[in-house]
Amino acid sequence: MILLRHGQSEFNLLFTQTKRDPGIVDPKLTPLGHQQAQAAAEALRGEGIRRIIASPYTRALETAAPIAHALGLDVIVNPVVGERYAFACDIGSPRTELERLWPHHDFTGIDEIWWPQIEEPVETLAGRATRFRAEMAALRDWADTLVVSHWGFILAMTGQKVVNGQLLRCDPTDPAPDGFSWHH
Image 1: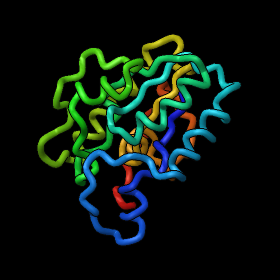
Image 2 (image 1 turned 180 degrees about the vertical axis):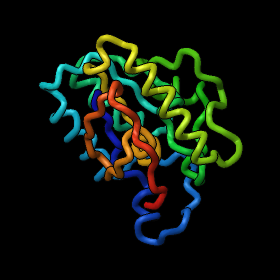
Image 3 (image 1 turned 45 degrees about the vertical axis):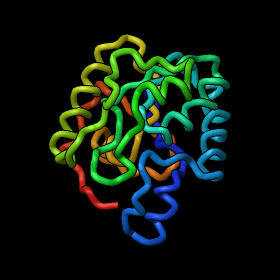
Image 4 (image 1 turned 60 degrees about the vertical axis):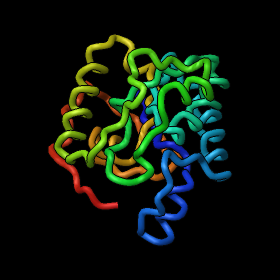
């Protein structure tokens, strides 16, 4: 499967400059983030992607939208691939609002308030990544899947740190990384 970190968000832009939480709830992509999403759509055209799974955060949904359009696919929204809840940007938007904005995405099985209410321990994130890895490995067509996710989730899945808009191949049948360092 291919993992894609969402394009640059308003949060990423300010956090990179200040190293402080700017307090932006469920941020949107910046113009650069939209360019990164378009570039990912172009890069993925010949990859044989038949399934797109995206985090319910706005930045991931905005990244997935041009890819879904370019590939003629629907987006399956899954909070399991969401970011570790630790900053203001990890407060999401209610399901009904997301469904209104993205009527063609599949929000089946997502609660109205789907994000955690307290900071998520790193161990809990690692458990989510392990479960998702096992679910994907059980599918015969896992290689045809794109997952639009976040820095923390991709780190937990692969042990690798990725920048906004970066694509990373991941074989869920390979052993998971032994651990990861949690520093930006």
